[in-house]
Image 1 (cartoon, rainbow, N blue to C red):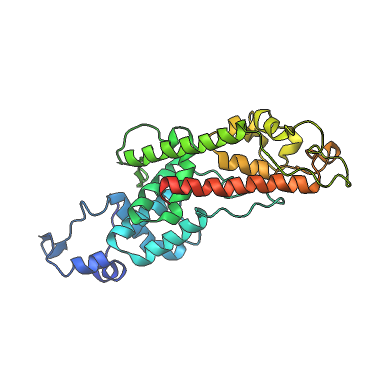
Image 2 (cartoon, rainbow, N blue to C red):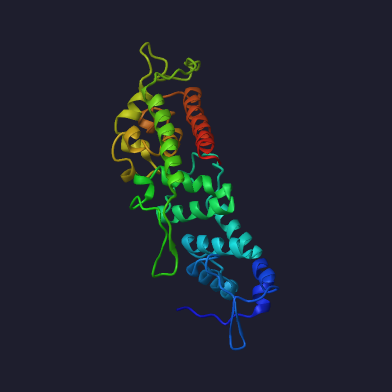
Length: 307
C-alpha cells in the first residue's frame, strides 16, 4: 500500500473538492484523526498518481508516461486540482493536437506518422470524454480507428487496476460503435478514390519537356500507385517496412496516412530523377489534390466522432 503524509492545508490549497469537504463533518474518526472517504470519488491508483505529481512536481522536467498523465488528469478533474489539471491538458494538447500540420516535402514525419500505444490512446479517450477535452479526443480516437480491433484486447468494457498503479481502461460500448461507424465512413471514402477515374486539368506545360499526363492515353499513374506496390525509390524518407503491399491495402484503415504518402511522393521529374514523370504544374496539381483530401477527410472524421 502506498502511503503519503498529507497535510490538510496542502490538499485544500490544490483541490477545491477538499476545500469544500473539509468544511463538512468527516466520514469517521480514528482517535484524533479525521477520516474522509474517497470511495466512489476517485480510484486509488489515480489518487496515488496525483499525489505523486504533487509531491514530485518540481522534478517533472520530462512528462510522465501518457497513461500516468491520463490517471493524473482523471483524479485532478474529479478532485478539482486546477493547476495540475491544466498542466496535464497542456502537455496532452501538444502531443495529441487535433490540428493537422502542413505537409512538408523536406520532412516525411508528421503527427500521424508517429504511432501511439492503443492502451494509452484508450486511456486518453476515457478521460478526455469525462473532462470534455475535445482538443485531445479527436487524435486519440483516430489512433484507435486505424488500429486492428480498435486497440482493444477483448470486448470487455470493465476497468481494472494494474500492478503499476495505473488503470487499465477499455472503450465504452458507445465509443466502440462510434469508431465502427467512423471507420466504415473512412474506408468508403478510400474505396471511392481508389476505384474512381480522377480528373485533373490538362497539362499546359508541354514546352518544358515530356509529361506522363500529356500522352494520348488516360493517365493511370494514380490507379497503379494505389493498387500496386510502389517502387522503393518513391518511398524515400518513409519507412519501407510500413508499406508491405499496395498503398490501398496498407492504408485501408489509415487513409489519412495513405494520402500523406501520396501527397509527398516525388511526382515531378522522370525516372533518372526518381520521379513519376510529371511536369511541375501537373505534379503540383496532384500534390494539392491529396493534401485537400487529407484535410477534408480529417474534418469528416471529426464530424463523425463529434469533435
